[in-house]
Length: 274
Image 1 (tube, rainbow, N blue to C red):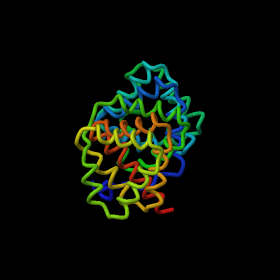
Image 2: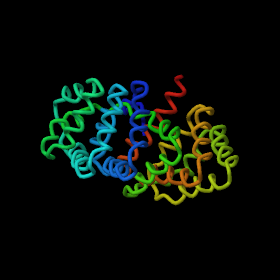
Image 3: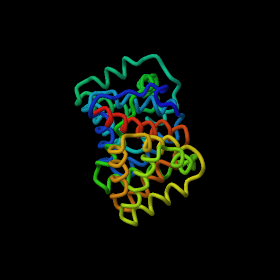
Image 4: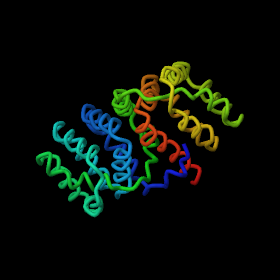
């Protein structure tokens, strides 16, 4: 996957962290439902929704996510399904007004949408879906920095998504520059045995397909960045490590590429730039 051709650029600082924190701090059932809806949505719609959130001011992004997650499940599911399944529209101004408004106003509007009849949400839907493809990056960083118990709950939501395609791991390892490949393998070998086993099993048990971008991103990134990401995975409790890997590998291919792999590559590129 040529990430440069996907117009992936840095998002405003802190937005993706706010999005992740909102997800991680939500009740487990709400978080799982939202993640499942995102993973099962058409790729373009899923990307547009995430991009719109990440481009908003941090406080508003957090308020929007918290509003979604704290709403009654039926209301939230209706809104998310409308967001993800609606045709793309031309009314981006509404979304921009929502995201640029003071945080209290943003939260009030989101809660009002969630508590309103389902049909009333469609104007917001079309604007979110009209967002151009863009910044989906520090989500992984936020995930790794979250409390471990919260991270496990979020990843379990990913685990429940339909299985995707994943098995080019070995080819990517073998075709990577020797130094990068060695660094990744050393990171695996130096981790606690339980975590190393969990990570490897998660990769090996996934079906063939689309983990190429993740592996290539790791292998082609500067060594310090790559090692930091791998070490975070390996040093987490075994259950968290396994759940994170399986969650990445088991999402549908299109959404997996949009929500997970571009985020990993963006994180590595952002760290390299800094």
